Amino acid sequence: MKTKITLIIALLICLVSATPAFCEVDHDALQTRIAYNSSGDVEYSGVSSPNVATSDTAWRIQKIIYDTSGNVVTIVFPNGDSGFNYVWDDRESYTYPD
Image (cartoon, rainbow, N blue to C red; front, side):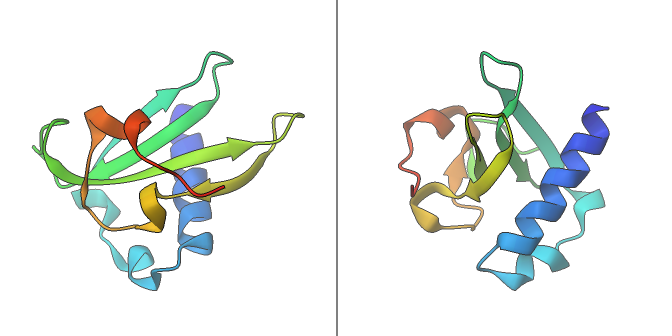
């Protein structure tokens, strides 16, 4: 089930990304990290090249925003930047657009 959720999130990110190149990334060559909120919903998703440490500045991070019914309403990137410019371990400290 979590694999399906990850693929759905990747598709949603591709669809809403301001950077069409995101859709061209070879996802088989990436590692993925997922962080859940207290309700058990995916709150953050991150991808990087294989063997990149979670403390390295080489992650593309997304925050998933839900409505009060638990439906995904938007996916946002730190500072509106969808680049591989972030540290996974610091994901909660970044500023995400509303």
